[in-house]
Image (cartoon, rainbow, N blue to C red):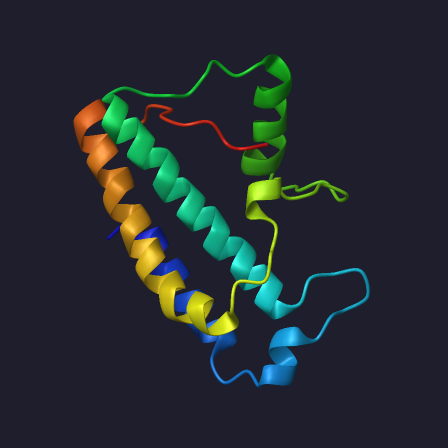
Amino acid sequence: MDPRLQRLQKEIASAVAGLTPEQWTLHPPGKWCVAEVIEHLYLTYTGTIKGFQRVAEAGKPLATTPSWAQRGRTIVVVGFGYFPSGREAPSVARPRGVPVEKVQAEIGPKIAEMDDIMAQCEKNLGARRKLLDHPS
């Protein structure tokens, strides 16, 4: 497994270890609770798996050429590590009430599944290629 994804698995497990049911659902004003944040991550991983499965089935990258605005946003977020406030998650990745127990049980295996399909696509289509667009 990619070391970054392995670290992600461990950090998520560590972050939620021992939380009480009340802590899972505590809402800071205007923010998501822990359960919603973890569900959001779970939904992004399942969506990434589905996207890369489409890439594998197509046998070719499905990414489009980024616009200059998209390139600029990528530099700001990835290059400088700045995530502007006020951005909303894509609708497919917004929490919708998946049971906490399901998310807890499946998030680690979903990260491993995501790693597998991404590695398969990289092996078949080449490393360091953009294979899929981000759902923004």
